[in-house]
Length: 258
Image (cartoon, rainbow, N blue to C red; front, side, top):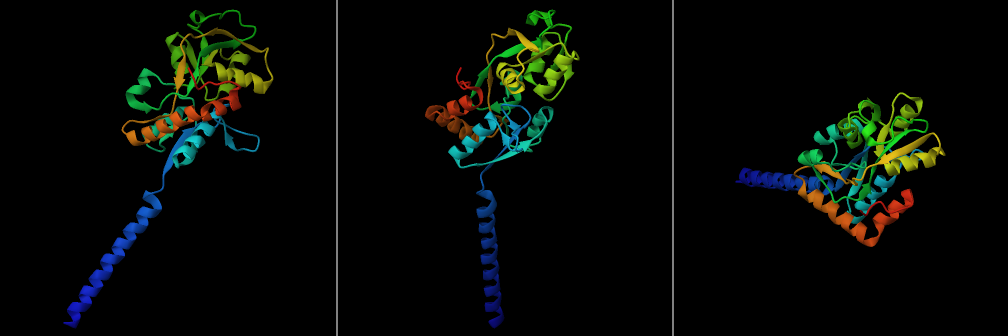
């Protein structure tokens, strides 16, 4: 009889112990809310490092604001542009925030949040270049572009030969050195580059697209809960002026409205 009672006590203790372990695990890991946000960290003013080495920029501030609105912890992951989508495919992180333009091709594979960046692509050449005056002149020319960027897609569709690079500053170096004839990029990125370089004479915009590009947070399909969390936060940030304030901080204007 004593052996039976002792066995029952031991069994009960094991059940309690197992239940306790399960509860502890849930409280420490399952309840932790984290959004892993991937970006270049070299694409000013959207995502870059300041003089002290801190990650900063328009997209960084927007991501942190999303965290503040939702209670999620924001964890940043940095990588070269051409590797970001491969990392997203492998679920190495949850989203990309790097002025990712919404395109029909990307929409087939990924989900996008509500857009919060509106801008136009521009055609940039060296100041002494007289051969390229419009998008019609791009065919057969060398364009310095990120290999998987939407600007690269535009240049290819116009018949350009792509000279691959992973930073806008490098693209401009290639254009100014003559290793590339042109680059197509975001008008705001170019304006920021000129401001930071103090260089207003070495290059010029010869054409601007009529098509407004919309950029947003991009993620793998199938995560409707996270998409709703981010969209709700962006809606609140648009309503209370948070997005406008962040935009004016980096651009001196509101790029978050069409």
